[in-house]
Length: 301
Image (cartoon, rainbow, N blue to C red; front, top):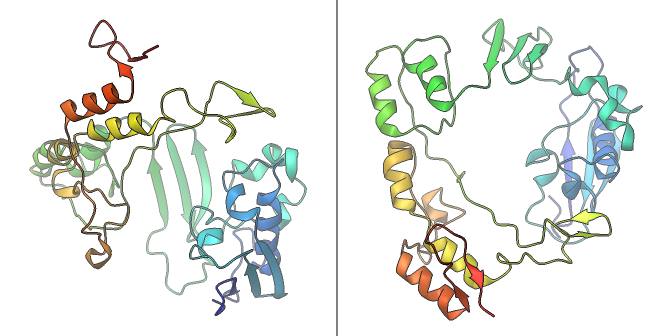
C-alpha cells in the first residue's frame, strides 16, 4: 500500500494456471477491471471498479490506483469483487455480449477443484485440480455442493443422516440444531467472526424511472426516505428474540456493523425493541395508524 493511500501494488503468484492449463497473469487482472467497469457488462461489481485504474507493471505485478486515499483498498479483487476472470475466455464477450459467454455456466478458475457439472437449484460438482498451485492440496478427489431445499433439511443431511459432510451459515433455530446433534453423526462448530446479518432499506423510489433507471439516487422512497420511519422500524426489530430463538449459540445480537474482534467493538452504540416508542415517533412525524392494526400506515393530510 502506498504511503499516501492512493494505490496498492499486487504481486501475483508465479506458476499459477487456469483450470484449462492457460497461465494466470497480470493481463487477467487488468482485463477483469476493464470488463467489470463497463456499464454495458452490468456486473454486480461495477461500483468497485468504475472509479479506479489498474495498470500492468509486468507479467506478475499490477498497480491499482484510487482517485483519493481510501481505507477500502482491498474491495477490488478481494472484497465483494473478489473474482478474477480468465481473459482468454471472456475477451470476446465484453459489454452487452457478457451474458452469452459459455464460461458463465461452466466456470474456469484457479482453485483446488475444477467444474464438473451444475444442476440449477440442485447440485454443483467438481473434480480435483491436479495442477493446483499449492503442494499436496486439495485433500479430496471430488466435491459436491447441494442447493435448493430448506435450511432444516440441510442441517439434517449433515448432523443426522451424514449424507453431507459440511453445512455453513444455516438459518436454523438452535433448539432444532441441538436435537439433530443428538443423532450422533455430526456436530455444530461455532466461530465468532466479523460478519453480521442485517436488514437494508431502500430510501429511493423503485417504482419511478429517472433516465431509464429505477431506484435512482434522484428519487425518494415515499415512506423509507423519512428518517422517522427508519427509526421506528429499527425499534420494531426484536434482536434479542432473533438471537435467542434462531441463532442461539451461533450468534449474538448487536448494534454494530463491526462487532468482532472485540477490541474494535464500539461501546457507544445500542439497540432497543420498543413498539410504543416506535408509534410515538411516527405520530410525532405526522404518520397515523390505518383503521385496522394489520393495515399499513398512511400519511396524515
